[in-house]
Image 1 (cartoon, protein in one colour):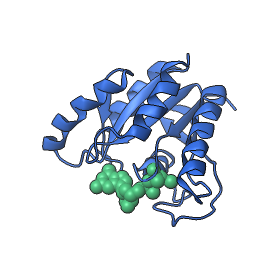
Image 2 (cartoon, rainbow, N blue to C red; image 1 turned 180 degrees about the vertical axis):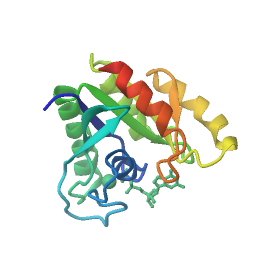
Image 3 (tube, rainbow, N blue to C red; image 1 turned 90 degrees about the vertical axis):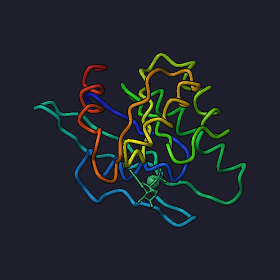
Image 4 (cartoon, rainbow, N blue to C red; image 1 turned 45 degrees about the vertical axis):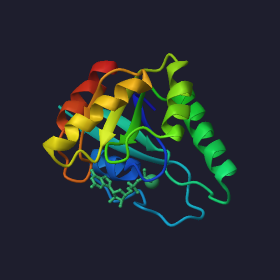
Length: 163
Ligand code: GDP
Ligand code: MG
């Protein structure tokens, strides 16, 4: 499949919005209702003439909190196995949650390069909030707004540098 980028993180942080922006498609279901959706969505992306694939580890079967957390963990483990780069998306408006910490603990043990993506940085003031994501122990957070596209150029440069 070539270079594969996996997008992981807890629900509602903007993974599918980022997937759609990177693949310039409307493939992923944004803000899906609780229930069943396809749990993985593949697409193609291109930046400065280099092509790569992206997988959105989007939807889950949401029945109980336990299943929910277990599914997130499963998607993270799958991403570690198959991806060349992992985008760990967090929400700058919410800060670090327990679930973010769980995901970070798994990712820190893997050899796959991880980029922390501080999404929903819709304005410059919110950039200051992103400092708390250093506590995830996974390096510099990349501030982006998947919605507006701001910061995604720098993120794409960083992704390419990891292949
Ligand atoms: P997912 O569950 O992680 O795939 O998250 P979604 O992509 O479905 O997005 C969840 C919600 O966050 C939706 O209402 C999006 O419109 C919103 N969202 C995504 N990216 C941004 C962003 O950069 N800024 C803001 N303000 N909202 C965003
Ligand atoms: Mg989604």
